[in-house]
Length: 330
DNA sequence: AACTGCCTCAACCGCTCTAGT
DNA sequence: GACTAGAGCGGTTGAGGCAGT
Image 1 (tube, rainbow, N blue to C red):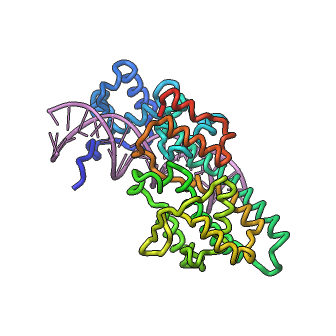
Image 2 (cartoon, rainbow, N blue to C red):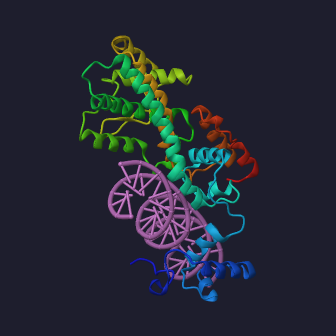
Image 3 (spheres, rainbow, N blue to C red):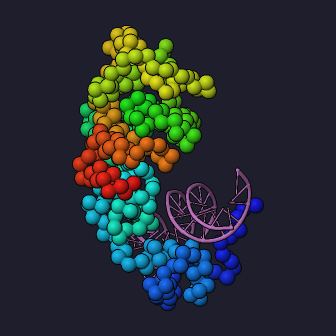
């Protein structure tokens, strides 16, 4: 049995607020305040509205100094940076933007900002695809075949990226046990692969005895790109269900051994490199880790976030997250 | 002018958190 | 500690507006 409703649904008006209702609510709150009890408020005023509805109307619309629409570039940057850092915690983001409500920011993100940025991503990948297609694709190879190859390759790199991020990023899933029950990126990838496998043959990342050459190659490149060295054998766990290696990556000796035998046959194409670059964006779009239960001080968290933004080429968005820690906003 | 599809955003829903008892 | 009620939050919905055909 669920909890009792907060109000009598049958006698409560829903839908858009009339100017009269707005005036009543605004006048009352400006004169008496909310009294710390939104549920009782509509009865006092004589409004046939749910208390929650009154609260929402006041906070999102009637409250003084509310700004609507017309987000500036700076506000865009703040929203992007914070979204990357903390995810969809709209109330926290709204707290950094005076006059903006969480609802407003949420709507703005979902309807415009996300599309704006994703559109940019799509444009760049589309452009790289076109240039590659001009140079390399044989006649008669259709787009679907190309996309299939692209997708399987992208999934491999997503898997690698998550693993590598686990070693690199102290806030990552693998290095933060507090995150474990919330979300498992490995499972997300596996689920994604499973669903895609319904339609196409995805090459699953494989254990060291039979690694996917392209995956290994790209992983090594990734290590090089990030000045990252595998110096010791890390704790190796294999998922019982899938056989997929989790919580670690291959050792340098494994990589060297394998690469000496097979790397000569598999050189990453320009398209793979270009796609790898674009995957930096994908990572943070898929970065849904829940930091709500994290431990540790916010300053170090923000510092990590800032570094992460820099790492992913987002530092130019122009907002210094460190400001937030200085003001103690998060 | 009529139709259709897309976009925006105010409002709702249902869940979690928190304070009081 | 258990329970309850209100506050707060994020995800989702749907009405209205707009642009394209």
